[in-house]
Length: 491
Image 1 (tube, helix red, strand yellow):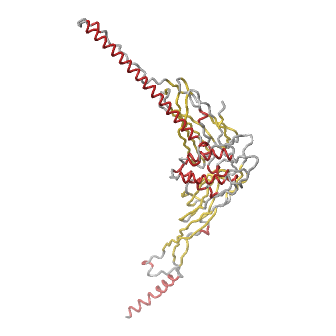
Image 2: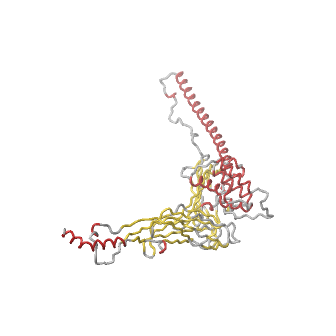
Image 3: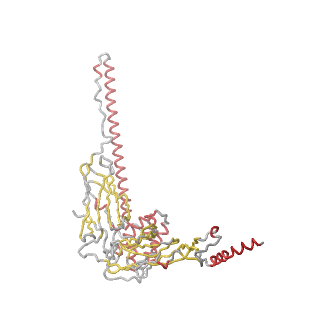
């Protein structure tokens, strides 16, 4: 009993010290949004671009704290086309010598009006994952509890906290196009290249594939002009459009684009063939001067298609009269048989020639039919709105309709087309057409399924809005955009 009492007296101060330490435990946050552990920066690749010159705008969220459920508010800019470059990216970097995480979102912005352009502040919301460490305080640093060796005196606890930050508003100055330069096509570079198919030899009547690729930097693919089939026509061949493909990408904050047009050419006669010269005038934004891109089509040699026209020869046959052992009557029969054989060969040749002539006529009919169908697809002005069978036909129809009725450029994007319609009817709202643009572009560039009947109906309803009685009608029509198809076909 005495021993137990002595032990209790000895350990009692330690028990009291441990109780005091336990009472002094508190929650201390490691990271906090209040101490500059999270901030936002925004920037553009150019602060004074030309009208219609696309630039890249970036918003970067820097954080030392783990985040989740990060959401950027939609970016809305008046008098500009905005195209997000995919979803945001997350990566690690260094800031003031310390490791930090970056959440980055980029856009392509194309100004539609000269003068001042404001990129508004953009809100970013999310959830912070804060680490809190539970520490112990002692009143006497020289005294330790007997239980220190048997307990974990430090634990890390994670809790979540909602946050909202915003980017800084940016003001840009949009330079006006030069009045002496028409049409206006600003870019860092534009080049052209032509390529013939490798299926040689080239023969009369045989289809030949020819492609023209227009490449550019500092310009989007939809702004690159098209080479019309009308400007490739010649007397020695027929030419038809085949397919078209556009591509956009961004590399090191530079916009890279291309447009590839493929044509089918059918030679009509032998000899050398070349296509009419093509050139594109554009404005060099780097050197502030006019520039020209041209193409060298090259010359091809067309030969006659002689397949099936070669006649067999019997050069090794000997006269049967040289064989003296046969009676004369037998020789007569042999000679007659030889004549019949030659006649049969002639008949076979005549039949082959007839068949080839028939096939040639069939090919001409097919080519004429193909031409009429191709031209019908290209000439969307003859296509009624309800007859569009694909998103591409509907887009072509809208481009022709807008060019004819609203003075929009030939190759204007859907956003520019619908923006032109707003000037005809100020009561048109963005909600009247934004779903149409998303549906068509989703089908063209993301291979999304689309209900053409519903889409045709939506477009028809929208076009009716532009023909209401309260539409403002000016005495002189001023197009919103000059043509963006600056191809000069003069020799």
